[in-house]
Image (cartoon, rainbow, N blue to C red; front, top):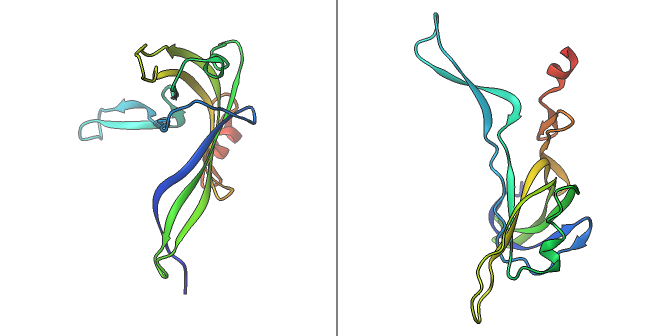
Length: 174
């Protein structure tokens, strides 16, 4: 009997900067969108327009890292001359469909980029500042249980989905 798992929630996670756990972030990090760069095709032989995606080319991607308070931890991420190496490690909670038992599997997201800006937040008595740092993404790797789901390296012409190099043919022709 095969095991089918129903994914439900991210049970817990930590954010690391160059291997060191980052403290003081709030409970939610919004991950980037993969929005393909496109060109509109139209003309003889086509009925209307088609948005053609350029394989492996994506619009600017960013991640916003929220902090409760603007402090030394947040300021570490602010130097735009330094490359940032961020790793999100989390435990995804799943339900085993056959047994109903709760299970967990590891998720890892590695991001390399540079600081793009900071929102210093608000100043309120008995409240968090809700500051945030925005990072421009140049590299992203998404893994589940050690298996690569997506890898995009904008500087080194790498785009892989489920371990398959989608640019292999294109790179061999250039």
